Length: 104
Image (cartoon, rainbow, N blue to C red):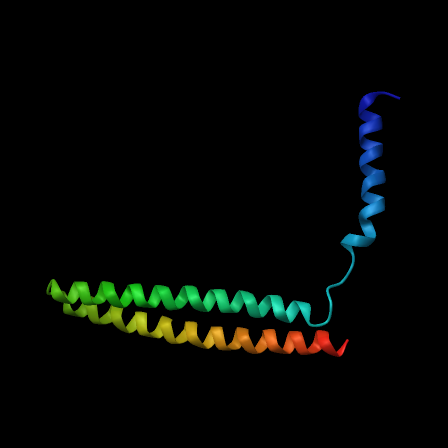
């Protein structure tokens, strides 16, 4: 056998031995926990983004650009609220995931 054939065959053997590990499904509550964590992070990012937009809006207003400033401030407030909601949703999902794992 030449080197390439050996290399390819060893790859197939490795894949065959690791296949059960790849196909293993996550625990019942693990998916919810992971989703909750992602939503919390997304909420935090949105809150920061909203705060930055509000600051930008205030800066624009001081420059005399009131319409643009007000628009950005409103957008910032909306993003902050959305971020808070997502954080709460994430926390709830995490708790549900933990509860499901404890039942198991």
